[in-house]
Amino acid sequence: MSESVEDKKAHALTIVREQLAAATEARKCHGCGCLHKTVEALASTGAGRGDLARSLERARAVFTPKEYDCLGCPVCYPALAANAFSEAFAREAEAMDLCPTDAPAERRGWPPLPGDYRVVRYRAPVAVCTLNTSGLADRLAGMQPEGVALVGTLHTENLGIERIIRNVLTNPHIRFLILCGEDTRQTVGHLPGQSLKSLFVGGVDERGRIIGARGNRPVLKNVRQDEIDAFRRQIEFVELIGVEKDYTVLERVRACAVRDPGAFTETPESSTVEVVAAQEPRRMIPDPAGFFVVYPDAPRRRLLVEHYTNSGVLDCVLETATPTALYATAIERNLVTRLDHAAYLGRELARAQRAMETGEPYVQDRAPGPVEEDKAACGCDTTCVPE
Image 1 (spheres, helix red, strand yellow):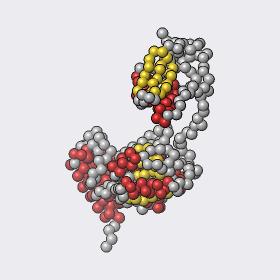
Image 2 (cartoon, rainbow, N blue to C red):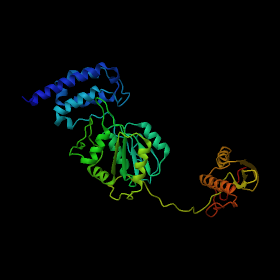
Image 3 (tube, rainbow, N blue to C red):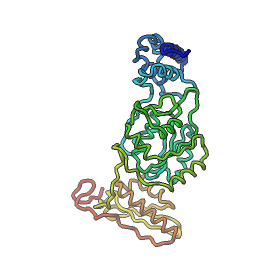
Image 4 (cartoon, one colour):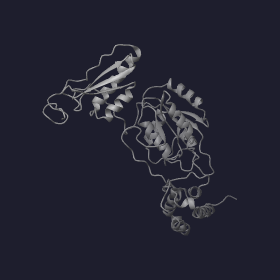
């Protein structure tokens, strides 16, 4: 005989009480966001105000200030309680907010949402997600392979996937997502890899739940349906779940990069990176600290820089074998005070070093733009010389 709906609810409430009791006894749960958020969510339900009220009260009594959102425990008592309740009380569970992690605040630029990733380059077609294998992500990011935009991990099937969607949508150059590494496999754990794969296969239902996902809470609440649809059109999904070999992932990166279809043009309205048409400088303001004369001493394999005050007095000569040592010393001695002057010095030092290494003649370029002599950086009517 099949179990009645009331019997299922009674059985679920028994499991909830048992798991809350276990969490109450486990000291590690007292300051964990999983327990805090589950108790708060259950308290908002009819059962929470009735049959579960005493269990929730006992759980609250052991609360300590939240120390972490989730420890990734092999067995998560609050998650077991929440899952049991959700299966038996589906309608009430839809309104429950069970994720202990707050949605991240968006920031200007790309990527707009913070996360466990490393940016390699913006104009590249491949993103690599190594799931729970952080070592693989670190190695790949360190290699900075051509064709890769960013490399990162993924630990949750809700906020984690939402971050991927938002960060990818704000970079139209990303057209491939390689999913590799080990998916989280715990008694009660997230399955972000399986959930992300399911998103590409079936999308989400009307509640934002990823169709076919088997993770704890595969519900996307902070991205719109049109954003999810655009993400699935923009990205070609490449599954390498379980693969942790660098060379295998790199081979697939190269294979994707040669098929780059170009920037995606159907991105929904969202924050994007501003593309600025750079212009040549319209004027040159002398540095109050003075100016430099750069020349390579090829026979001695040394770079020399003479520093003059704006009145034409030589006050210092720097010499070394590398441009980095020269500009670092110039900055340390306050011989350069303007950013454009520092950029100019760095460019000229690089040209001088190349000339010294190749034997080509070196002629120092003048600073770009006409000299602005009617008003100095300090505000005087003419360029002044500090005494």
